[in-house]
Length: 383
Length: 225
Image: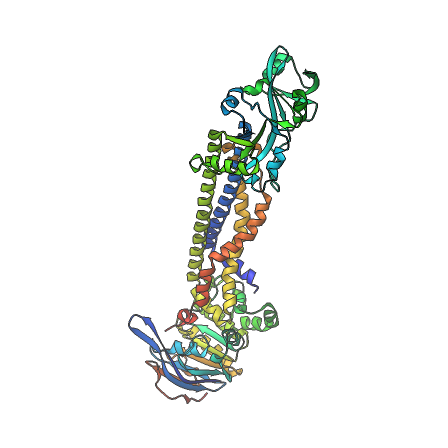
């Protein structure tokens, strides 16, 4: 009788043991799928929240007076526009800084009052990085108008807006933010440089740090050391509260994952191993018989490892389905901001089908070796 | 057919008690129905399993059909068992999740099962199991189970059948039936070694051996067939 058929019949006969083993594997795979879905969701949610909060690193000209910078909200000094490229080309840049966005910012009169003008260059992300650049790109000749400013000027999408002799087309009116963005006019960097007559200059590079270190680990010193090598004519200010909250969130998620994954694997392996050992014990007489019938060690081991692998395949498929069902049902409630981003990761099924049978066979390895080493005479002797 | 030379095997079965065989030498020619008798714990099963290549002796040698079985590798010995030997046990040792027919075919490759299909069906018929061929062991009587075990032992046309207390769990009628079938196997050219502590097999025995405290108490002496 083919081995597979023999294993299937045995599973059906010892169905209590088989079902318990299967449940263990299903639970382990489902938990890992849920952890994966939630970890991904946590990262996505945090990224979105951070994006909504804005950049947390502000790289400004070294000679800027920080007190003045904080009172006006921007640097009155400038850097050459190629500073962003120089920073991006540094080998260590994207370890410490990411989503680099050059900007030029000034207070200008528009209509009968002043407004903030911010010209934005395209965001630069690390090479090979799959992150979406944060912020938004504004084409030349277009403008995004803050909520209050638009209301005062009567600006609507598609209308023209004269700004110090240049005519911009309103592309978007921003929603009310409750910040100074409501009186801000966003343009392309080139347009801002032309309006302000500061060609080739920027006042700031906005960025996000790796957010890997909490305040007690003194990330600012490390950021400043990195910047001093790459861009000595600049200084970096960190919005620490935001960075710290983000770092703590990331570290908590990583700690949770580092703890949970080995725990699930350990409990799963112990569960499968113990049940496999019980199966070996229950089948001692049968094993003696197979020996008497000419089964060698390889075939005896194959009976148990094949059994574990088969349960692993079933456990992987069912665990994947269950994990996705749980993750996709409860995940959006836990992460409502990015609820729409939840989707089954089909690649996980492939991994699960590949890894779970091997994992189950590994967990059953010791019991299988016990079966192989078992003395058939012990169970077959009538004496 | 079977030659044992100075066979010794000791092992502890319970704390403080030792059961085994001590310097056992014997010869069983082909075509014999040998009965090995002795009290419980005297080493009968140990000797039988040593002859069956399942229990390596500490010293001495075992030759079956001219092959020194413990000079073979484990895999070669497994093949030898599969092709040349048949086993019948007191507790039947049927695979609970296989049917009667599948139990008889157990351990055979697909091609071997195909080749021996007619022989197996004839055994099923001869042993009165035709209407139970698709039944599982749990639904069989003790006599039927032992007949299935007997059919399994004979299915691969072995040269030697080793039976360890084959009638220990059977009523006298079923016990007689089992010995009749073993005797028929011998008459068809096979060799049989039966271990028993009773006298049920005596009418069929061509040779009786007695084991006491691990030693052969009586020199093998041929009886009239």
